[in-house]
Image 1 (tube, one colour):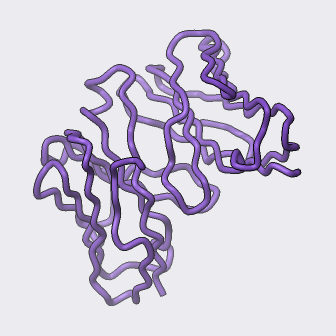
Image 2 (spheres, each protein chain N blue to C red):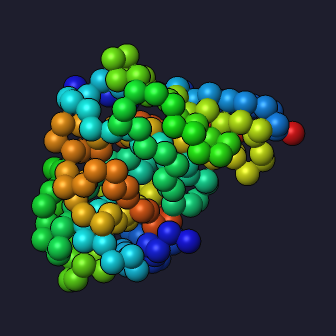
Length: 109
Length: 117
């Protein structure tokens, strides 16, 4: 079966760096997405990786290794507003999006 | 501001009620989606519409009935629901079906929090 694994919850300190991991086993691969979802709000697009390597976008970066079935989202200079759930999703060979259950990130002062 | 709106934001209904969820996208997109989001579980894709035609129905019980009268509006009609149907129902849109696009992403609405008593 197809599966996306990410930690259920993580805690980090304001101003620090945190890395949220995502591992996947899917039927084929056509890209990996990261979304941010604040409590009670819509998921919003953060990043897209289809080739191996690091994509940087301001304080957020996303890394992909297709051979390892692995990605991470790196958040730098954490702010209180970064407290949210972070969803990893993989597009498989049928272009279906397979979603992880999300990682709830708690930022402490 | 995502350009996708959903009403109502909260809904409480009994198992014998009939209600409808509404989604509207103001982005000129051609594809629309209904998802179910339960606590600590992955998003579950329920229905996919492309240019008002249903292209996917992921084994969803018949007590959920979608309707897409035009490319900007999507409804989810609910009847005879069960308590386990309580969840956040998210609507999303994308320019085209994901299988027809490269880096295209989905834009989500804020969801309707449904509670079935």
